[in-house]
Amino acid sequence: MLKLYYSKGSSAIAAHVLLAEVGAAHTLVEISIPKGAHTSDAFLAINPKGRVPVLETPQGVLTENPAILEYIADTYPEAGLAPEGAFAKAKARALSAYLCATAHVAFAHKQRGLRWAREESSLKDMQSKVAENIRDCAVFLENDLDLAPWAMGESYSYCDPYLMLMARWLKANDIALDPFPKLARHFDAIKARPATQEVFALHGLS
Image (cartoon, rainbow, N blue to C red; front, side):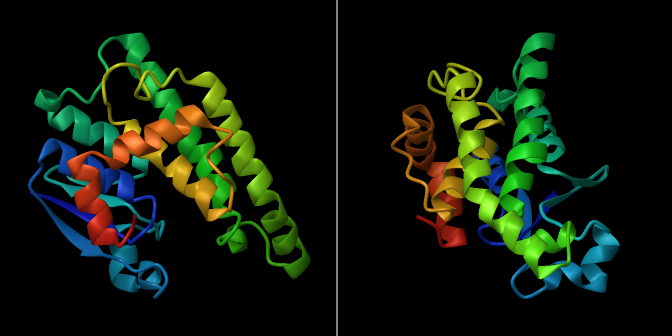
């Protein structure tokens, strides 16, 4: 049995959607970031990073979306959500790494600036750049990915629920999806999937 620690509306949505996609037996533990549950001693004992998602597996604890998503896909090979071949696998990891280390970090400057600075002027300066940086990330992804129709091509993969977060980060910064038709079509397509609808309902998202 897998156990997913998540906060509603957080990037843990990606792992949650993938668990639903593969039909994995799992339990959920809500760690409310707005309520500070991620800083509790009990949660820090599970993940000293103090962040979600966290996936408890029979082998131990996994953190970080790229690792969790690939683990789920590899653990349920019958779902066909892990790209095959060395190059395709590397491309999927490259996309996940970009979303994790560049796009998500850019978005995090909006509300998590205290991770990098403490002066009010510094925090405001970082926040003022978030929309521009997220837009730049979207421009790169719109141009770099074929999205035909999915992140890795014709087949839905573990990258797709992660890429879905880009549309949410854009919307959170009041950036319209119109200039990014491929990302917009991808977002609409993934929202239409039953697994996504099930998870969105639990998170209170539309």
